[in-house]
Length: 209
Image (cartoon, rainbow, N blue to C red; front, side, top):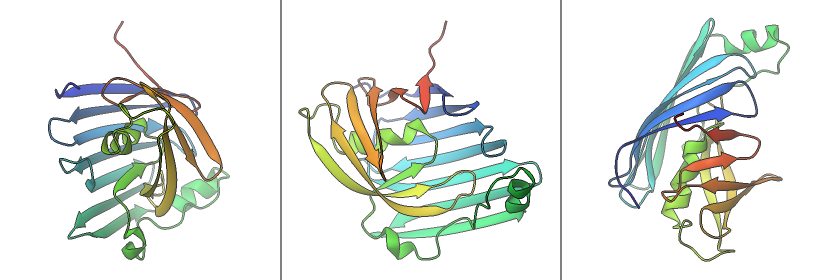
């Protein structure tokens, strides 16, 4: 696998939006990126994520903002435990209500100990974050039908609510895996380094013309 700095761009297929990420996978992953999306209300999201050399997630920082509101959340793993801190300015729920959308709830997670068994983080709507378990579990080279059931810290957008979630990753041979969680599943195509090329119903990787 190549271990150079990469600039990746995806176009969302579930809503008007896109994501750009700059990644370095020379020793685990360090990455920063920006998402823009129109649903449920227009927002911009900026994030930074880091893993250790074994691709176990150790830190995620996210900021998201729209007209009249801004939220942030930070997840940091040390000595086997997660710390979660969050902040809010403005009133996202009021903006959602004015748009006829349900309230978002609070950012963060009241009890981080609910993430005790979590080795991966997942940011809503981002195809980049599938790469973390794909690389950690070695799915790019695993035999077909190799299945792993994992616990993740799932960060919802735009609320930045953090939820413990169970996800299932199944290798389908070179450059493809099946993702499943809470009744949803998709067969996802990745490149040789485990970065998403095509995620049905979510995103498509852009290539220079």
